[in-house]
Length: 297
Image (tube, rainbow, N blue to C red; front, side, top):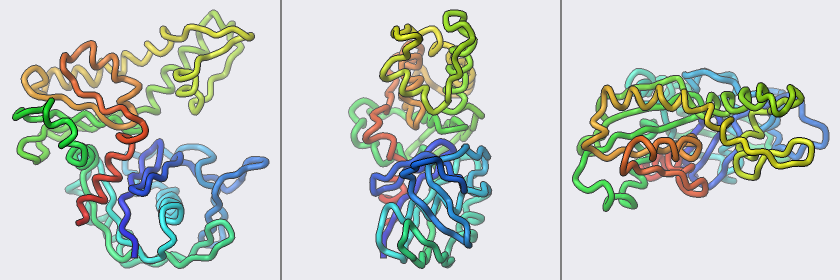
């Protein structure tokens, strides 16, 4: 039997086994696709392709079960699994049992690629997003936190969850409807409207991070898109204003994590001295999934 921590975000799915793929499925595979195929109830789903399905209650999305089963199949060859999952802090108390009842003691007959499998979910534990991820990496940054309380800012795919951690307990939970998807959209719209590009470019949201990392070329020349990236500052201001008004960011430690930490990390550093930005894509992106798995013990 396998034990897995799985973080199903609006933008990406991550597991404690180091698996990551975009939170997309489609029943129509792209030409020449190499996407993993999951067959469930007679339908073939291609993982990581198609459009995102956005819903603040991620467990209610139509693609939730296929994404979850795909994550299980990609992470283990065991057919019986114990799962640890997450919910946004503000949803945790109200919907924890809903998620458990939806999945625990359930069996799914699937085909992953050409291999038939009978996935049995033996048990389900649910933990608060962000807080669990911070606790997983807490020892790594303890020297910077010291004896202070911690304001957690977890920037996910479609929401930013904020909480004040006092003695390893989450207080003052709050969610803002801003995440990496909104940030990418703001940047892509700015580029499409940029007069330098003469209205000739259509920017795919999925390409924005590549343009940030590797550069954007127009008619053979590399372009400076720093002003376009700056279009996301208005979104930062909404998060910052909430922090400034309702959280002790001047006296306590502030930790930014989640998929949006790398995108907004610099602007956070410019406005909150001493802030801790957990933006290592290779490690911190799996913080929640690894935290869920650790809490199962």
